[in-house]
Length: 192
Image 1: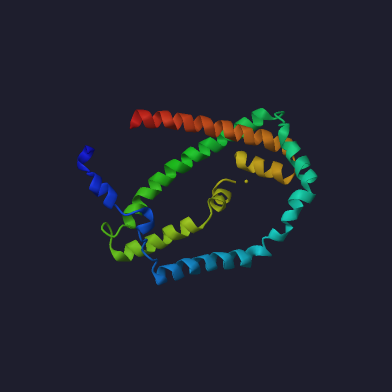
Image 2: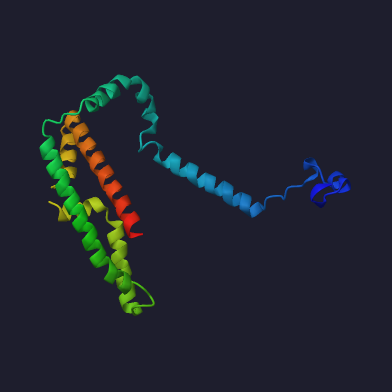
């Protein structure tokens, strides 16, 4: 027979029914069930605060949601030049933020490395980095970018229920992000 397999070897192979699967270890099974219990407890704990019981409103108040969504279907580009100017400001802020994060990040990464700095410098530097990661970037944006850029305008249009303007701003953001992404892809091809 081909490949050195004889008819006897084929006939002597165990059938799938004869193959015995190894039994799962009791500790592993208990761990898995324990994890499922933890997940279910967390879901039950958040059921009332998250108001999951109000899911029926998705169906009973569907007309309200349709009215809400219809405001987004007719973008208002009346102030498009203002939106574009604020988007350009946002891109400028993003470039500066990226540049400054690299300039500040390199020395801090060296200071938080065990093989580059003594422990009495490494530990406080790492705790500072932990604090910076724990604080949401929106808090830093509020601190360093006073309420400017497209984000502020988007926030205000949403807050004042101006859905047509919100839709226009979102479209400006999507187009800008797409352009920046295409440019960055081309730069990566050139540099790498």
